[in-house]
Amino acid sequence: MRVSACVIPAIAVPLLGAQAGLPAARRGSPSSAESIERLAEKVEPKVIAWRRDIHRNPELGNREFRTAAMVAEHLRSLGLEVTAKVAHTGVVGILRGGKPGGVVALRADMDALPVKEALDLPFASRVKTSYNGQEVSVMHACGHDAHTAILMGAAEVLAARRAGLKGTVKFIFQPAEDSKPDGEEGGAELMVREGVLENPKPDAIFGLHVVPLPSGVVAWRPGGIMAGVDNFRIVVRGRQTHGAMPWYGVDPVPAAAQVVLGLQTIVSRQVDLTAAPAVITVGVIRGGSQPNIVPAEVELAGTIRSFDPGMRSEIQKRVKGTAEGIARGAGAAAEVSIYGGLPVTFNDPALTARMAPVLEKAAGAGETMTATPVTAGEDFAAYQQRVPGLFFFLGVAPRNAEPGKEAMNHSPYFYVDESALVTGVRALAQLAAAYLEGAEPGKDKSGNRSLWSRLGRGTDRRHR
Ligand SMILES: [Zn+2]
Ligand SMILES: [Zn+2]
Image (tube, rainbow, N blue to C red; front, side, top):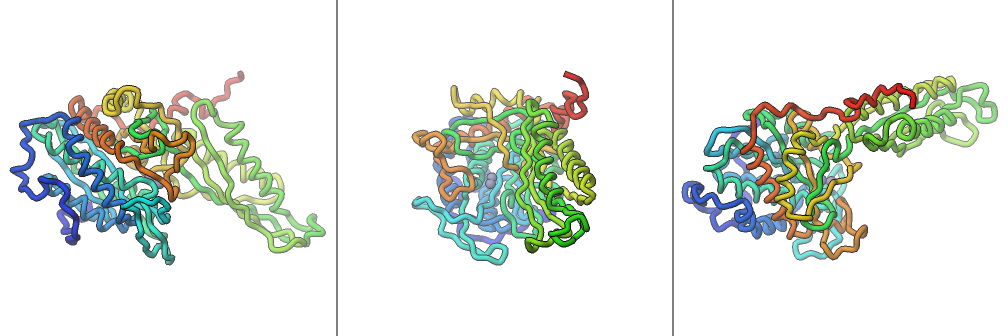
């Protein structure tokens, strides 16, 4: 980690807790060991207040100065070991339990988005800032304000039970999940590079995302829950000539058009969609200057979404092969680059099966669902590549919302029903406590295995 025990500039952060000013020794007697449910209920008003405070003061990726200061201040008040300025503005807190045991990590992201809030809330954001050289409005339109407040609450709950805790809990408050200024590094990958998964190394990691499911509903699935994201750029090169006499050159336009269609057959004809879904979208076609010139080249750009690590690498290979093969057939050439990869947010199947009863208990009877895969990406995947992890969704749409009409994440109307936050606190605190209770350190081997390739589908040549 880059900086240890760094001093965060003091900003006026409201002391929301009755105990916030007390020295560590006088805070919540650990021997009382109140239940997580009871402690979560107690912390709920604070979680709501923190969430509103953060919502009113949103900060873009790598600029979460105020939010990070508030988090660090809170973790220190709980007596945690705190490291700040990890991957720019990240904060990591370590809670060492009273008994020896394994290590579990809980993660929240803190960044907001360049979105102008359209909701008329008393704590709506009016914040504007400069972003990539433009003035933009800022809003917590992805609900990371809720994630941060929930994890602050879970830290308070677990800190109150420190004496009975078997092992160590690492609280990871991460910057720049959704947004970061052009040309800057940041987010989960940078946190990992700066050592967030070392000293101590977690045996498992848990995280959540608020989504417009009914408020309080908890949803998850084993395997891929959010997509692996890969973008591609293809340049089809021909030979420029007069548009009236294309036979004097090599026309890259029809070749590029065939590449666009050929790419669609990868998903529809070449990978087993019963194992996991996938999407290929060509979002850019650019080429040519005027009607009577066959251009020298055409540029295509697009995105690949996949849910299985094995299928993901297979699709990447086939995108390259399809584009190059089609271009060659037309006498042209294709140059393919695949970049900006974000791995599949892949829930370790064994860990997911083991923790499912904990999530069921945290959500309550009838309040859980099997999540459908979400084709957006999430950089929580970077942690799951190194440590078995479980990422789940928490519903925050009002119960009376018309189904299908709820505003999606990133909408200027994205709304968080705050009665769901306590469920998030319970879920994270119970996952950590239950994991440590039954942990056999080092036993869970890193997940991210491909269900698809394990089934032999990557190279399936059987005739059926
Ligand atoms: Zn987002
Ligand atoms: Zn998000």
